Image (cartoon, rainbow, N blue to C red):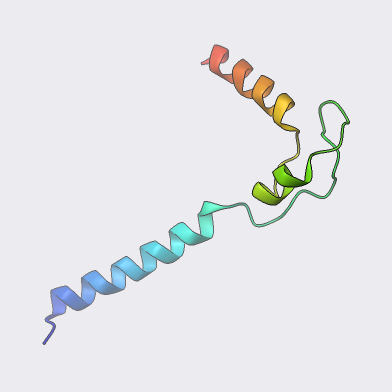
Length: 71
């Protein structure tokens, strides 16, 4: 038989799992199939793996490299 602490823990775990699931992936996929940086088509494999992606892999790598140098 579960006591109040067990019930409260279970309820909190469910709420946290729901919140995490909601925030894991952006909800809206990218609208355009073209990279916003270079204009080339975003490969189908990238669109499938990351439907929210707005850049091709090469441009995303460059963008992330620039961000590392800014920090």
